[in-house]
Structures are given as structure tokens and as C-alpha cells.
Length: 151
View 1 (cartoon, one colour):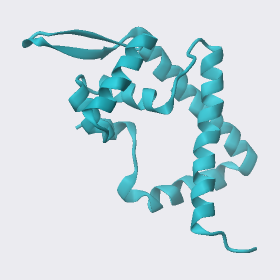
View 2 (tube, helix red, strand yellow; view 1 turned 180 degrees about the vertical axis):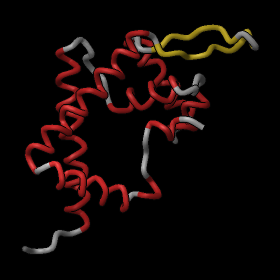
View 3 (cartoon, rainbow, N blue to C red; view 1 turned 120 degrees about the vertical axis):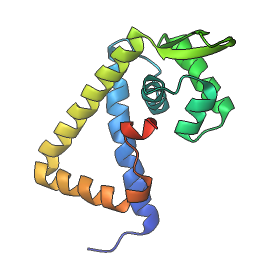
View 4 (cartoon, helix red, strand yellow; view 1 turned 90 degrees about the vertical axis):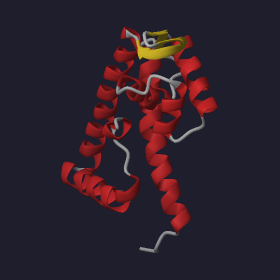
């Protein structure tokens, strides 16, 4: 078997990510959550974990405050977050996840688990666990989990 190039590996990893996301997004659309992108769920999880301002969300997602503000605006348009007055500073609004946002996170998480289960059936549970362990080892310094969204 010929050795793949680094670019081919990167494309395979990106393809795997897109394959999972595309399946989940298609099912989310069927369930009334059209237009959702991965960044929306990452942002919702960060807000739910305490990133309740654009500045804090930007810091946790490693994006600019402006990009975070745009994401918050999109989430608000979808009905996944709302803004409420900050009890300690009337000039500031705090972002919070709505029940619809919590529903999206729950459904999205279950759908990703479903995709993972289909992949395990396709290549075998042991092979998938090995792949996950190897990817975790290779990305040790850049791994991202829901816990990373908390301080």
C-alpha cells in the first residue's frame, strides 16, 4: 500500500468531520433545526457553561469578539439563546440558552452518537476505539471537548 501524503491525511480527517456533521445537520433539519452549523452547537455549549457575553464567548471559542457577537445574533434569530439584563450592570446584557437551545444540544449529541454507532458497525467497535485513541494522542495538545468550554 502506498503511503499517503500529509495533505491526503488532512483531507481524510476533514472529510470524516464533514461526513459526521452533514449527517447530523440533515437530521436536525428534519427535526425543525434548519441552518444549524457546528459553531452554533459549540457556542451553545460555551454559553451554557458560563460564556454569557460576546467577549467571553470569543475567548472560549478562540474567535474575535465581533465573530462571537455575530454567532450570538444568529443563535438569537434561531431562538437558541436570548439576552437578559445583567443584575450587576444595567448597561450589559447576558446571554442564556433557551429551552429550544437545550433541545438542540440534546438532539445533536444523540445524533452524533448515532453516527458514531454506525461507524462502529461499519469498521468494528475495536477499530473505531483505536482510531479515536490514536487521534486523541496525535491531537493531545489541541484536543477540544465540552469541558474545554469551562474555565
